[in-house]
Image (cartoon, rainbow, N blue to C red):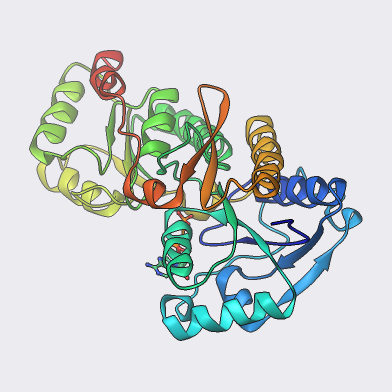
Length: 325
Ligand code: ATP
């Protein structure tokens, strides 16, 4: 089937590099003589028919911008069969015969559900800061989010050093600890608490106490928001209760991790995957997510993407304490 009209949307949490991906999708489509429609506010915009033609000039000067010019949303309506039927009708009314979906695991879970009921060729791009998707070594936005966290933690360490303080820093990651793990290692954190490994708070407290006794008075404890023990507030309370003599502070980095100009790595990844996704749609390689594995573009079926996640390398966990000795 020849694709003539592609619809592109960004969905779920925004991530830096989504604009670079939209630009690559629009320009590769137009290069191949295909019309492109931007669907605003993710699946909700599909349901509401918030769909507009995109020209090559509409994506000028956005490769360096965070956020998404198409806006994004979480859509309750798309969780219902009626909502998905409305979305399909809106696509048909614009003669859209191919879709590019840029989002995270929820977006692809929605895609699987949508394609059980309606037939339209689609290719996905991993647009999430969380890096919690199978089928790709990196996701668009992860590198930038980690760099943002690293620069913030470096600043916090300066002030922690000046006052001999223990800092508990909470980073994003409801289900995945990749941001916390990578930022923590890059900043020499004394401990890193992530959802993928069970947190034994007594052991954490013992280590903080032992470090204090050997005059390691500055400690950075990085915790992912979805850690099984809790976030920064819970860890802070546990430290205060057991070690009241310590000067402990918390910092919840929050949405700063989502914004900002994408790093070169995210711009290149987004450009490669946007270009590859349109080419895949053209050649009929569909209902897959484009990813990069070992620096090669690969395509993984949506249902495999939502079922799996690359496990965290054990060597990274093992070295946390070794390197903070
Ligand atoms: P991030 O990882 O950045 O949070 P995400 O894509 O995982 O991004 P979600 O909010 O989980 O973000 O999912 C995006 C949207 O996909 C949801 O708001 C919903 O509309 C749709 N969706 C998710 N799961 C399903 C499902 N099981 N059935 C139908 N639609 C779904």
